[in-house]
Length: 176
Image (cartoon, rainbow, N blue to C red; front, side, top):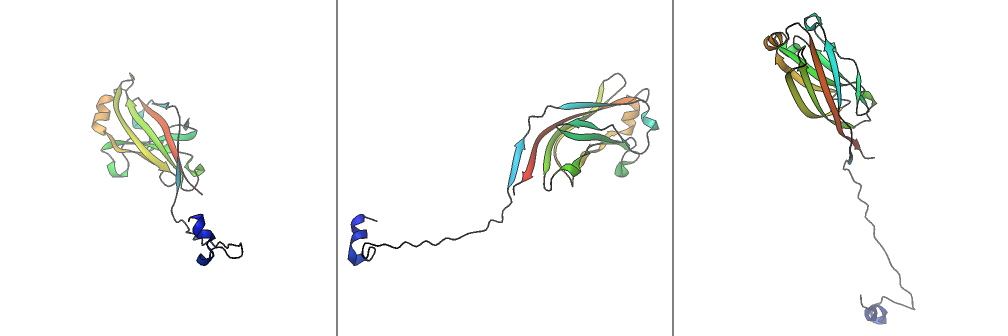
């Protein structure tokens, strides 16, 4: 507003050299959910699980726990297939062991590769994924990693190496 308009008594803005200002404030409560993505500079870690007699393992077996990206992991192996693939395929999954340490709503983005190697350290099968894991989704993998007929042909002396290469790419947390 021009000063001349403001100081003109006929306009009523300035009376007896006094002016009153008023303000209306509207507060809108946000109902949105914010998240914070933290990208990690985590080096990949490769864990080897040597199995001398694959056929002697039970229906399911776990590797030793290993650490990658400040979290604990293990490989979950079904030598004769999980329930849906029993007798058809070798099933293999990566498991986040310490998922209960994640905060509510926290998710972890992970890139991992699972490999099956024969006794001569030759890769016979591999699979790679980038997934989100959390306290409610603690594992991911392949129910049909490799047909059992192929496993039998590849592993001459019933021994193998399961290799898990894990890289934590980032973590998402809910904002307060």
